[in-house]
Length: 167
Image 1: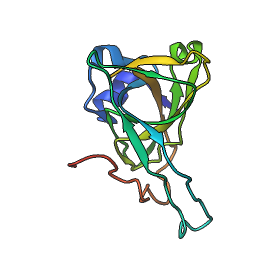
Image 2: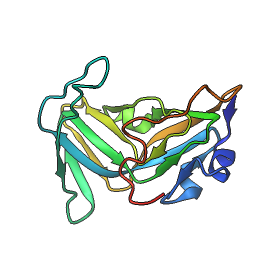
Image 3: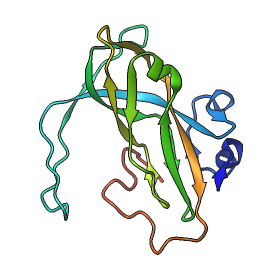
Image 4: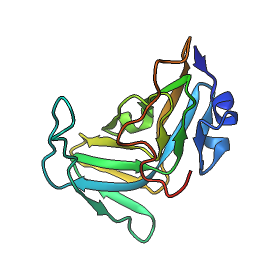
């Protein structure tokens, strides 16, 4: 069952919203842009994560007006908000249609039950002219799904509590 955005907000599934009035939508909650980085080396994945290596990124700066012009390419982005899912809720993210209409999209993984953190995703700019983003731009909408029963375990992976200083 999909949880309406207002209910997910009241349950605390997303914290630190910049502007709840704008971000809480009928079917989900929008996340906003905190940071953009360029991936500067190769990653390495394997079956067991023994050899997993997540590549470093070079943080890109917003200009004095809080804007950044991104040329065609792949970027790692971080959101402002902290996602905090209870054990019976998962979330799926979708790019805002305005982003897609501008020639860019965001790829992201499933947010598992029990995950807490300030997430990162992959922004791909396909537009030959690039895209201009402002800091705090609304980029994706999270849709929250209530599981029929609590899963056999909740998220305990490497990214638990990523990019947050507290909680």
